[in-house]
Image (cartoon, rainbow, N blue to C red):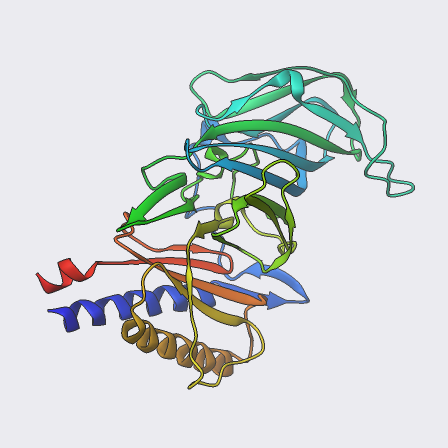
Length: 342
């Protein structure tokens, strides 16, 4: 029984890695999807956003309270006006708390490329559209077509036990924190343009306890001591390529990195396997298959994934029907030993 379950888990893992690889391609140095995901992950028509204001990039910082299972954050959205407008429509889940009095916005000096200008635009108020996950920011003045601005929104929310949005789980004595932003669940975590058609870069940082490891879509750039919390650090990650909000993801726990010196890998992407438990035999077999299949696919199609790394996290008893395939970060579940024996 153990052998059968192991084979099923290996196949499940490899099939989703194959889907992940085939779902991306490089074209004229730009990152594009090989299929249009808008139809696959469509929102209710009533929750579609107007196209008068469009995102250019996101900068997000999260400060989780790991003991109380809450979090606070700040998002800075670089915006472009495709048409004259004095309001901005975003997706924000009703469980996400936003204090409209703390929302700020300033214009970018496009002539000099100054994103830190002091040309502030007065924000009148922010309000939710009833029965929809849409939050509207109303401005005092009309912003003209072609203008670019930085919108800053502080927010806070809850870390859930159900595997949606920002959630937590545990295995034996190990607790983990993770994201599952499909379908269109990014607005559970931060206010954004939560439609697959909006593909923009992200800059991300997060606070974590020193004894834990944080993984994100991109490699870690640097870690700094938290200015107020002695036992915490802030991780700053490399800027992502343009990507949809539902492919944003991170994972935080007391992780173990699986290392294998018996197989030759490649410079990029670096494939690393992480786990909450030490199960070297199962990890070795899966790791070898993943690397072998990736090499064969890369040579067959004559292309590669435009990523510097792929982190594969193996989570016992992950409460999801399917793996979470974020950009550069894959989360897989498998049953525990007790269930395998049964």
